[in-house]
Length: 268
Image (cartoon, rainbow, N blue to C red):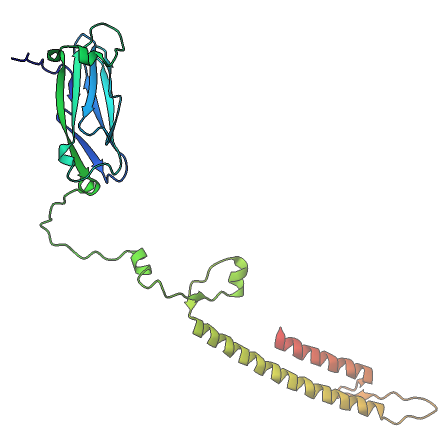
């Protein structure tokens, strides 16, 4: 009859299973904590049924009395299939150290009697990323009410419609933005109407200017054709209703002043 094994002295957390969470397309990690509650130094070793699929650090060592050791277990990416998941298991072996040394040769595990080795088996649990992150929601007993759209949703209902703002000269110099915007066809219509109005005014002013030039030319012709005596030149004068005398030079200055006043009144 084989000797009966001793109960596990080390406290293992988690005690029964190692849970791996993730998509398994990358390396998945989980942790194992070993605590020594005794007053003796304990040796430990971590084994697995699929050593090519896992990396354990540290996989063996010693634990001082009353101390703990954290073990990192890493599942390699893409190293497990659905059929293999149920076969993956871990085993934690422990035994009391024969002395107070901090390190021992690995051959000690083969030399010691098997009844002095304590072991604990842990199964592996694999949770896909969607399963681990999904949180069930309780159904609500109250009927759902339609939620009014927010300001951002209203603005994005028709994102393809773009408007060109019309900026006045005062706004462009001050750096402010217009409060209203017109569509492109409305802007074009306004510009065409303004262009036609400007052209009409320019034509009218040009016509009046031509008439003034013609009258001024006639007046100059009359002044130049006035008869003069060879002895003394009599200046041509014009008598107003008030009795004052106006010379040709004064008349020309008055006409030029009238033209300038007319032009300034139209453009300024």
